[in-house]
Length: 362
Image 1 (cartoon, one colour):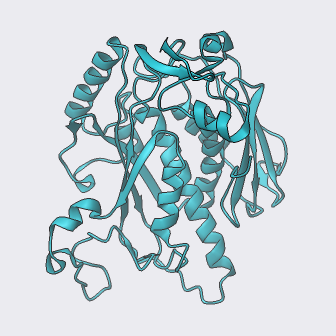
Image 2 (spheres, helix red, strand yellow):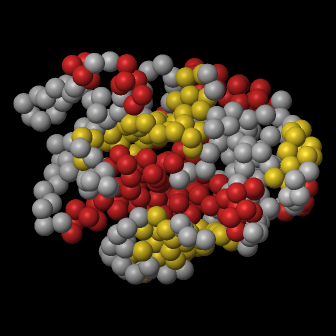
Image 3 (tube, one colour):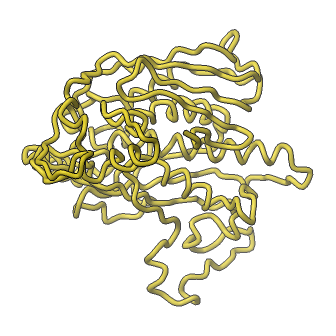
């Protein structure tokens, strides 16, 4: 299987399955001399781990990361950083009933047809549990680009949305983390939580949207033509399990207005009066806030009977078992931020190598 490496200069390779012994990775290209805050790394993992609240899966995993190499006296040495996270609470018998059955909208069918074999226990490599490795790497990347602020929050669940711009919200960690759905608008958060509980009680799932905002981004991040900043962010987000869409700046709403309405007019200091460009022009950051939205589908595993087929082409009835998220959004927040940090860390390495680099803050 190819495709297990993300990034070019600052890159991470990941390994492991949902019900295997462990997951882990190797971070290559991390500069030497970065003093790591291990509590922050574990904090990010705790934001992603299962069992946090009643609206997420109740699988009980500590998700404790163990570093194997590349760090000495709490500082990076410039050599590959190896790490591992052991699985502690996998109950593989919950998946015995799908040993030869393809779950609707899962990777079961495509994995078996492509590779001739699949790990049916929790989806194996296709499980979102793989994202623990991304969060470790992203937490280190955040400390590498610490002057840049990345904030994500749940902006909609189903048809319940925050009808406010991110500029009207408190995007501090304290505000976003004050409720289990990670929505900074308290009234909307309560409605979202009630909706998820209602859906969960029916044995169903629900999706929604996460908004991500990047502040204090320097001018000049991005490598046209084929490695534009928004293209790499889009690739990063679309690589996350359950993601069905990505838009930045005005996104699809920008198609409903004219060019004269959409253009971001300059001020004398180089900033713009509006920011419908989403902080990126020509694939390069312009110093304004970068903001984008990621659409997550309802999780495919539901606790209701569905008609499907087995590996022999016979129609069968199946029902999900075990512990699953009724809504992926709250646990996806640190994943979105980690993938964003990995993209920016990779670009930052490019700017250090480029003789044309004139990166400066606005």
